[in-house]
Image (cartoon, rainbow, N blue to C red):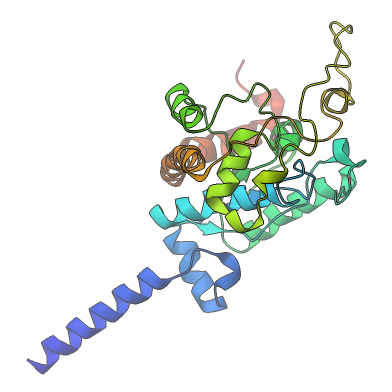
Length: 291
């Protein structure tokens, strides 16, 4: 009887310990980190944001707050190791605004590459980027393609959630339609009211204009790096004064549901690693690639 009780206690202790294993990388001890790598199926998330102005009502770290909020909520449902706040991002378009921390293109590239390399050196074979900053989109697209420039021992996945007309309509019914809603608008402000209400000042949303100034409207067939400044020089695109937590929760939950699904798919994925292995093998000797 005593042996049975002992075994039960050991089983319960083991279960509780497994349940208590943190998914926040910064909270793990070195021995627990080893367990976390295995428990996560060697998969981790880097939530990426930036330090930039978000109108007059939101904090500089808004993108950091939200990308990490999505990641932590998802990790609660599907275990995965979540990297600490990562703010080495592309934000040249907001260098004219106070509080913007804009690193050089060379540095942000090297920081991200070395972070991936270090995570792989520490046992991770699949890395998911959860990006909270729209100004990173072109950078991350190119960075992802550049991973094919040499053999890698890991696979990189970028989470790109999809909008839902139904969720948007429900959220707008709780607030109002924001005709601009591009940056620090109703959607983003509502999400922050839900996630981090103590650092949000909705009452300040009317202090500056978030109207699209469309100062390049006469230029057809053109892309230029100044396009964002031409539209939103206040680095605020939207009318966020009706933002509320209920609408924000709807949008956050919709994003998190997609992220949880993606994590499960990435953990089980054998296609991308196999394709990479085949690609790097063929790229090393292209004359032997079957034509």
